[in-house]
Length: 407
Image 1 (tube, rainbow, N blue to C red):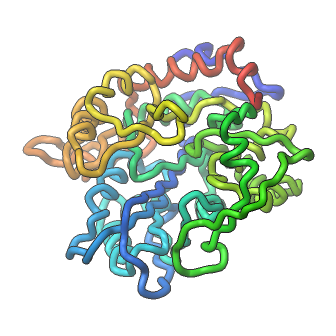
Image 2 (cartoon, helix red, strand yellow):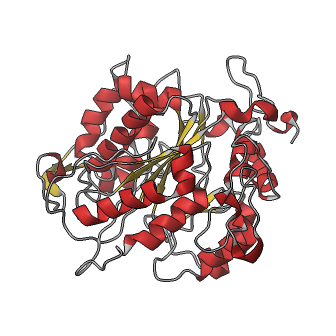
Image 3 (tube, rainbow, N blue to C red):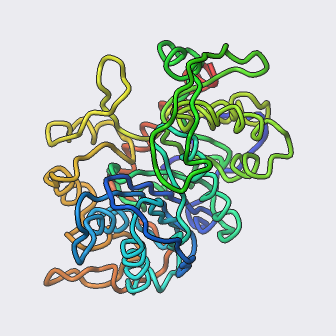
């Protein structure tokens, strides 16, 4: 890939790193798995088997089977996005039972490949997450804080849900991102909030998850509030790819803006669709680092573009052409679309890791080539990397990039 393909020009100088020092790159994934689960019976001890972490939250109806219902989808997603250079944070929210959380931790500890690289952690002391409540942001910031403490060499933070799935292997993503400046934050955002002004910005909610240990819905106050005057609201997709420096600013906050906005969004419905967007666009050090795309392929209901449509085989060609590295959402009870992605895009067999340059084992007789690992810095991009490159070239085009920043 030619470096000149990316026309981005920052206010300060930067250097495109050549591929042979790709060890400087590491993507960090937070997976948030949400489904249906039984309630937790007691507080959890902190299992920390491996470094960094993914966040998965799930709920189950009825009596739990011997093997938890979340296990197949959870394992599949982890195997599909796994790469030894990345860090993964796994989290089941407080609704999950102790046995589910323990089974997840046992799987991570028992998987030889994961154990070898030690790059996956499970959060043992779970967070309570309320639908539409600010506890989602609290849980995300908790995960970021853990990663900042326990993982020193990462560049971007990616949040994924259980309904997400990759459309290309990690070699493709790492290869393309190795040519990008490390200060780019990918998040869909706009200040033209339309109907969200009356359904998000003006209502006031109280999230019981901030002071209760049992899950319930948010409470809606009768009063409404006016739009803020001291900062400008931005909203967009909750799926983000954020840089380590920006997240350090959100956590450590040498400026008071992140804390001020965190307090404001405490009473804001679906605050995960606005918090990071408003912080990044209201600070002069970060507002010129935004790329207005969440790197997901999503089909929205219309109107009002509030809920993503379930993707099926009929969307496959559009997914591929999009160049996006991830897509959502996929139904839990229909794996045919994921099977096609595995076969044609990831070249991954059922129950195995997505192969990459780090996998040096034989694949004959159905063997997993990643069971034998080589150099984790060996990257072999495939044709999917060209699709991602094309997408980023469009996003960073000089006539397109600045005009869509924090507008």
